[in-house]
Figure: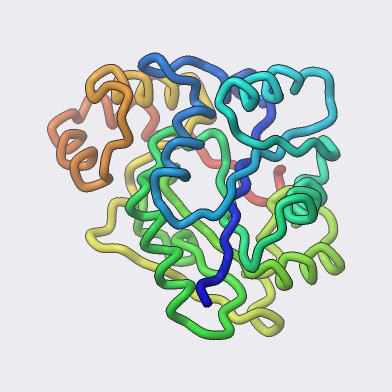
Length: 244
């Protein structure tokens, strides 16, 4: 019997470097809407839910979920792991695929690939493309067994409760963890949305390709010929896990 996989997209209006980024418009669709579509287009999810906070500032996220026709779960502002557990409680599943709403260039084909790898390895607790990174930041995909996520919830403290799955891959002695790597190495590309330079790059990509999910190979080939565009956010420093 095929395991039931539920996708959970964490989304909040609050962002220290780019407030409101999840609802910015990209080629006629919100950033969150693009993430939701890419996750759904993978064809591997039995259900999808957006996990946002109970803060009134996130009422706009709830309204966008209603417009998109996607389920929404609200939980603590800073305890994102609790939000995921709440989403899992209301949308039961054997495994959870974690998405973040600041990755509007998510590739459905990579989502499907990671789900296939996870299903092919019996007893696996966690699989991710970011353990040994070869993908651009912003296209990573991760999946965790539902029971493993509940174990993480019992054990995790501090920044691990913000990053949801980090306790699992930080403790491979407790969890069976697998890294998924794809070649060629495109990790030098930054395609996430965390700063204004990120926005300038992502918006330009969306304006060029339109309201579609673009396969990574096609996007990377195009960016190879756009050195000035790639340089826009090349110097942006990614926050460390502990910085939350």
